[in-house]
Image (cartoon, rainbow, N blue to C red; front, side):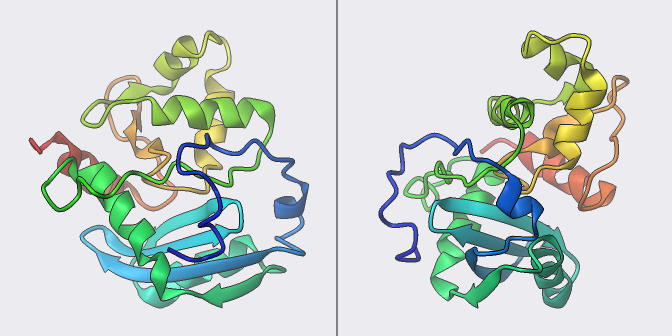
Length: 198
């Protein structure tokens, strides 16, 4: 793992940060990143000195890296192949425990920046067990906010850390797959992988 995030405790909860610097395109930030081909397409991960701040899926390596540049056009981006461990850990979130993945704890140190409400939604998403789904309205009720379904859906759409913050586990009230930032077909693949015994 990059030395940029070694100093942060693995048990530290997701970071509650002021989103202004990310809102300004990442001005003043250095984001280390790497890409790797996975069963769900090319995955790109990016990390600041505080933790994982970006995880996206795309059809090609170039498309995956473009998502990072589009999200943080003013940040300094530096390739760091050692971050592949974050890719492996993210895949273990979907695949479930195996002999090889037991040593890979899911990334606990996240540089999540958003409003207080968005941070609550993203934390609620992380509490949905692998192999289970929730509707937006169910998630809102579990948060104790039954009247904010649309705001929950919006927060899911703004999630910057796919898979680790598993917004793919949220479906329509009928159980139908709702929209997914990285493609509905990819969402289907993730849910099918999680439904397998592991």
